[in-house]
Image (cartoon, rainbow, N blue to C red):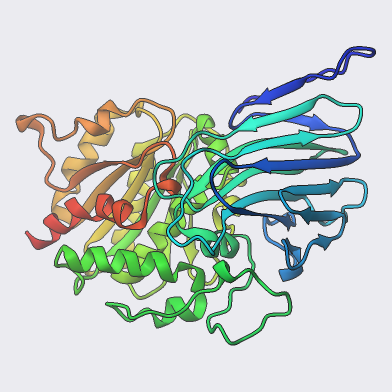
Length: 420
């Protein structure tokens, strides 16, 4: 993650300075205006005020056209204004979101939104997010966040194909499950969800995690299409915690990925829990993400883990050990997110061979900036074929991959293994 230094030269003409995705810079303790421009598409601009836990303090912290002012943050048309001096001490971040107007059914982002950030007596900042091509309807453009006694802004540019409902739920905004119920704050219509018929019993998801209903149904449909909707498995998640993953944790890409895995697990295991192992340079850290605590869970957990160099083999051993100690009779589906090559390649191969007879299936999911040739080529040679291993390249932005495409990549090889 890069930090951009933008000095102010007295007497010089104020220039527009460009930020790239992931870059950040300091702000003055003054009013900051963030203005969004999108070509050829009607959009709504909103803001979320977040506490230290990455969640809104109440539904009133969603600032949008029907609730345009909250604690120093206001929305007027395409602009969000944040008076940094007026923000309460328990507000640690302000997230700027742009979403497709719900009156344009079927519309998605193609050309990237443009963001201009201005303060008096400071250079104007601009950010052009990358273009989108996976049906994104929502984009987190930027976030203002406290750093020491001051404030900084980070260019995010994270697109989501899952809609504003999933994004709002990620940040702790309550969602109406029945359209006739009127919330205390009139939440935008595109946030509201309506129940549809599911292939599996997702009553627990609807009750405990309504924001995961849509991805859980998408996962259930893909499982049904692959002929294993009646099968069960213990789902595990291993997350890469190398230093180069920092940006993906801070931009909520890893959180969104974990939520999708949890939604898949709801179709395969009725306990509503996925054990999570963080792979870093030290002893692997094992915790869990559940239907009743998933909001911001990855952000809360990963701060307890040191950045390292990806001791994947140790994390794999920890997951297998937990599975064996649990006494589970269903097979284990261990989703292992990787961002770069492992340094312990021989150990990884040995573990894959030794777990083939234990009822363990390994899916390595690649996203990040690193090289992943080792994982891609695990089954490239006929002499080194692992029947219980597959690789799925989820691109650098898995949150932008549509639900059906994402779950197909997750499930295809696993379903073949299960049927065999």
